[in-house]
Amino acid sequence: MSLLSVNNLGKAFKVYKSELHRVGRLIGLPIKPIEENWVLRHVNFDIEPGEAIGIIGQNGAGKSTLLKMITGTLSASEGNCVVNGRIAAILELGMGFNPELTGRQNVIHAAGLMGFSGEQIQQALPDIESFAEIGEYFYEPIRTYSSGMYLRVAFSVATAYRPEILIVDEALSVGDAYFQHKCFQRIREFQEQGTTLLIVSHDRSAIQGICDRAILLENGAVIKDGNPEETFDLYNAIIAEKENSTVDVKQLKDGRAQTSSGTGEARVTEIVLYNSKGEAAEFIGVGEQVKLCIKVKVRKDIENLVLGYGIKDRLGQVMYGTNTWHTDQSVKKPKAGEEYQFIITFPANLGVGSYSIQTALTNSDTHLTGNYEWRDLALVFNMINVEKTTFIGSLWSEPTITIEEITR
Image 1 (cartoon, rainbow, N blue to C red):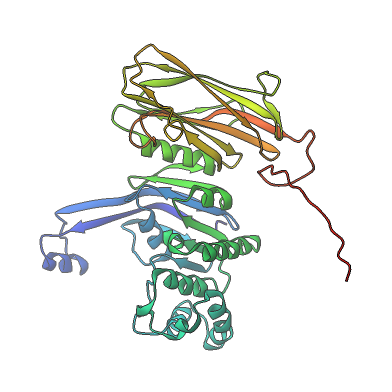
Image 2: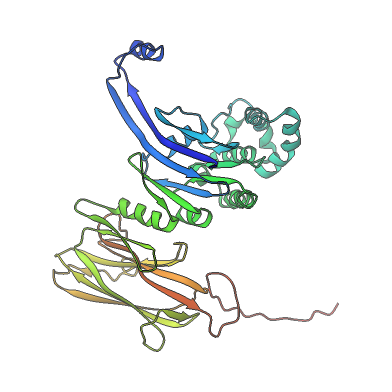
């Protein structure tokens, strides 16, 4: 049995000719709205116990509306959500808090609404106060709080008891770096204990580091539900898509989906990674000096040509990336038919594992303004440790360790 099942869910905001007509509709009169705006429609997915799901999409895609319907703070216009477990949710900052009450009083009130007894609340209060780390402000009215302090108290009370389902909206993005680390540490601890996580975030690293799946919403509909890396690749391609550009997804031999997009004025025609011996290689030794050669053909006269590239780990997190705009090496006014080769040399100071190269051909410092071509998984290679000291992690950083005996 699924822990959470979303079935043909939809939400429409209706506009009536007058408030009287709205009231009439509420009491059952057959009055039709003059306008019906669907912000979410035909949404279906299931979440099993222990899964971590990321919800991504552009502003206005319906992410927050979806979470509000799942938590029951907003009614659905069609379909339903079946929840088999207790939900703890952090949606809008301070939602349900009374600004005139102190942090402590709001915690007691919020925990009571969550269904916990007075005794349970009193037992948890010291831990909630300790986790929030706001000092004497815990006993001050929350109208005096900053947004970061709101988050500290809201997250602390929502996670004081481990829920079956934890739902987190973009609220975590306002916290300071230290508290964000605390939040994600607690989230990981809950995951290890079996909590299901549903998180909305634009933070690719957070989604790919925590989630098993990612669901992409576009114009109120689910357009992809799958591997977080592939889902984010498609999301980025949609953001970059401009008039006359296309988004293309094709399956590679290893089963992964390669996403590319762009208007096509320039294209990558070849990409090769050479090892220190000058051989095209799929396997590279840790710390080895390598050369990445990228050939580009210009298909239409353009004002500027910028090559960007990034190295991603197997989860899709970018280990390093830059472009020729930042290195002050843009190609000015290239003509149709011209070809260029970009040669990038660097020491492969990466940890053992599988990595990929993504490429971007643009007209400036970002692919969001002039996206000629964006290609994920343009090349895949593997790092192996041949001669370096054994280490863990994604970065090879050769240390010098000295040991000195100190006589007391």
